[in-house]
Image (cartoon, rainbow, N blue to C red; front, side):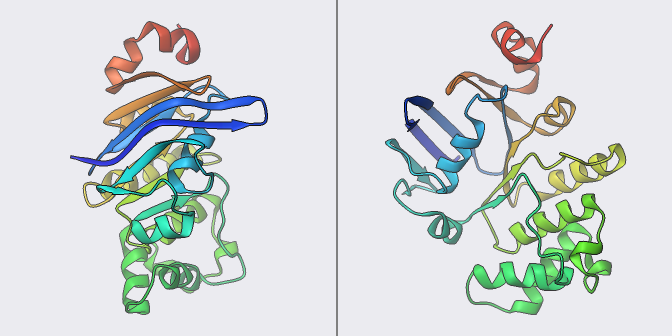
Amino acid sequence: MSLLEARNLVRHFGGVLAIDGVDFDLSAGEIHALIGPNGAGKSTLVGLLSGRIPAQEGSIRFDGRDITRLPAHARVACGIAYAFQITSVYPRLTVFDNVALAVQRGGPGDLATATRAALARVGLEAESEQLAGALSYGHQRVLEVAMGLALAPRLLILDEPTQGLAAGEIEGFKTLVRDLVPDTTVLLIEHNMEVVMDLAQRITVLNNGRVLARGTPAEIRADRAVQAAYLGG
């Protein structure tokens, strides 16, 4: 079942056509990776899907609802959460308070219960009273996921989540992402091809603002056009 459907998305920046007629679908309960070379349009497409950048043409439907003109905060209320490429935690607040702030943005509810639940889901209960700035970089990335999960999203967008992580931290992060589904659909924007091939059930490849290929990891790995444009060999 499709959770998100985007059709014929277009976005210009001055004379640059960053996204050129892109169709994109996410199935509920999947881990879907978005890959492509630098400048392919990945960040722009994610901005269009999350509402941080308005589409100039095309449409976006989420869970059957047209969200094309909704701003980012309204899409959060619909169930779309976005974890940024660069950690955006509040270093002088505790781990608990970071997540509690995200819970408050998500609307009414039991603040403490929802905060503890999000921390438990990512394994950070024991660090709840630590200052976020005292956490390792890897744990800060995990905290950011908890902040996203605190919004109770149907879709969690993770933008370069393993950037800067050590090998051992990457393995732990992959386990965390696997454990999110099927309750949460995950859109993964990632340059680490080992992570992509290990985690994703489906992959979309962007190149020059267009969809170059779609398929399973095996299909993408064997695609000659993808090899030439991005994977190499």
